[in-house]
Length: 178
Image (cartoon, rainbow, N blue to C red; front, side, top):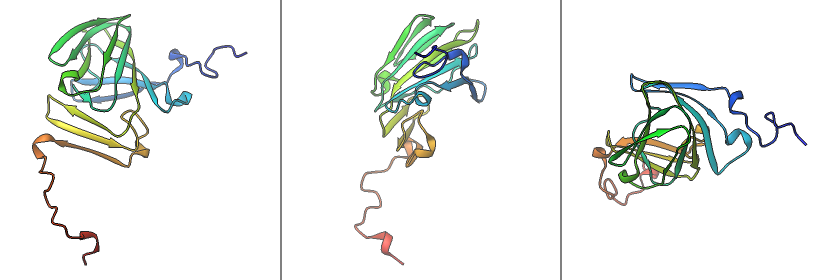
């Protein structure tokens, strides 16, 4: 029998080493992987701590993965589609895969940090859409939140830059040209 202090399948949140990320004035968080270090390959989970008034990631949706957020501490809001909802410790936010109608973003309240566990399926490839900025991101080889070194393909582009399916398809074998 193990003692439950971080051995086997038990993960102690208090023992995780948080890594910080930030971008500009709006985005900041500290996070630590939970599921992958414990051996999970099809379930992603991480502890996320967002400072007062900040957001961890841009408003986005996943076309291939569901996400769920278990609020552990603090208050804030979740933007979901065209609506905004208050969240607090004890709440669970479910964000199924889909288009802009399931786009989501958590924001910490002004009084203190928002601490939550983010859980997701780890399907790849995945396509993420960012309605506020008109971007699309594609990952193959490793799902979002997965091992970046395992990605065979990762690209982000503005939807305005999209081309027609047949663009530059002239039937010529360009790989064999001198």
